[in-house]
Length: 198
Image 1: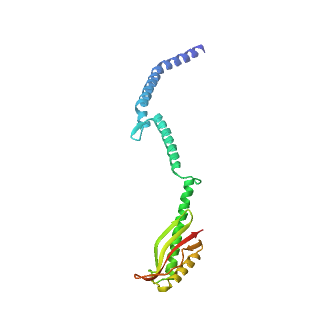
Image 2: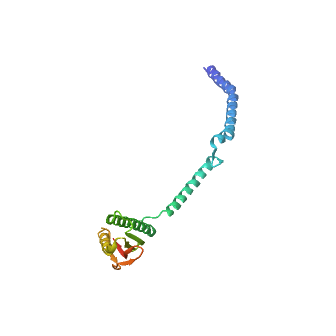
Image 3: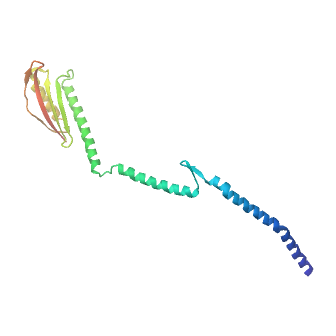
């Protein structure tokens, strides 16, 4: 029985002796290969060219955080260029836009009235000056009624009445109704209209 145990221990010692050098050699070669791959292969696989320069993982993390900081700065800068809704300048821009649309509406309606009154003649209304004040929502029109003979004052009165019927016009004032005459186009009625809008 003791003989069997001794034989068993001897065979284990022999196996350990015979395999120790191969295991040591294998471990040494494996460690060498891992070291070579760490210094030669891993940098080739983990270094990436970004923005014209090659960066490793640590540099990429720094680069990413720098880019995020730049993005936040640029977003804040962009927000500063945009006008907030309750900004006074934004309110002024809205008022200017509304006044511009009011001006366009008034002008197109005046053209419509003139064409409705005299569809075949475009020389009856001679507008010399058209001023629009956005702050007071008012307009001033200066011109003459021509080429209708002695009824120029009547045409002017009809023109004022037609403007007064526009839904967005609150008041129309004129400096007066006069009829004059000259050699160029006969009778004419000069006018200056002050129009108040809603």
